[in-house]
Length: 144
Image (tube, rainbow, N blue to C red; front, side, top):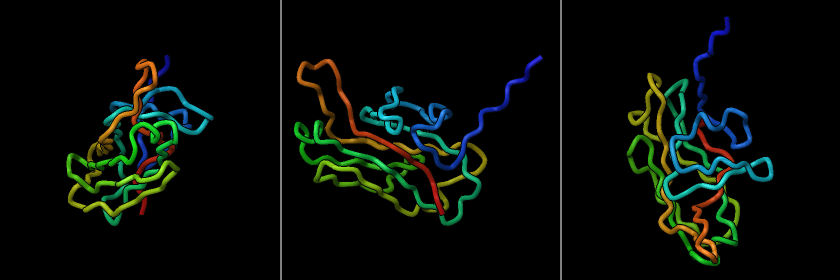
């Protein structure tokens, strides 16, 4: 007899981890590219299990690539933690970025998974309208 292990989440993950899809709530394209990153749609949402709520910052490693930036121009990515707006990131150049910001302790809990949503204001659509994408994400999570 085999007993399934309960689903385990962490406070941080990279897109190339085998368990990465466990963290996806919505709007993350499943295919892994270059063994490191995944495309998002307009509102990628993730979930995390936190070991503490004290002195945590949200960290995101993301890219707005040239192929999308050429069509959308500058974009804004609004960051939500548990439906609280944490920040609005203004992206004015096509490149890879790392962003982090402290999260108020009262927004967080250790008793259940915490959700994080990133909303991009303008979506890229391919030349023949067969595909739309938001931005590229490499890793995301909470750190002290």
